[in-house]
Amino acid sequence: MPVDWVRIEGDSMRPFIEAGDLLGVRWDQGGNFKLGDILLARAAAKPWIVHRLVGYDRKTSGRLLVKGDAAYVFETFAPELVWGHIIAIRRKGSARVCFWRVSWLDRAIAHLSRWRLRRVTFALGFLRRNLLWSK
Image (cartoon, rainbow, N blue to C red; front, side):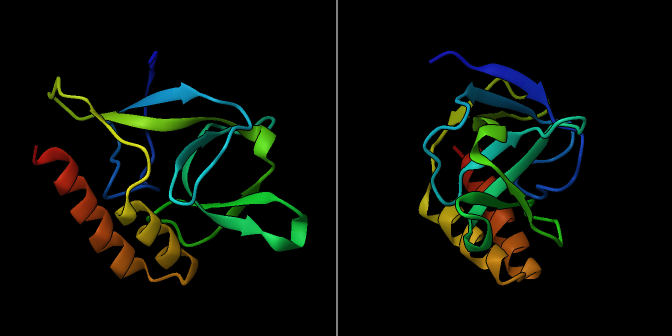
């Protein structure tokens, strides 16, 4: 499976993804998204955004409701503004690449993000990061 690597600069996905991490992107514009997916999106004249899919906005018929794990606010995107899934992370100094799709823990983080339970989602993100890198 071909993967392109992009470096993340922001802190909105901490602690699971940190500034300086390389993210493996599978380009899949407007594809089949699952709750808990980490998506790469871009609206016109805005920077690239990496956020987790936490649901669908019922008010705007099918727009994706996304949020960074460490962010306070939700954003909505039309599915066609999503360019791909993040399917791998390469951490500082580590040549190891860990592929995943959506785990039960990613779905739990997505559900809890909807309730704005930042401390719990932060703890689960930290657990998810440790589980991913403990192998």
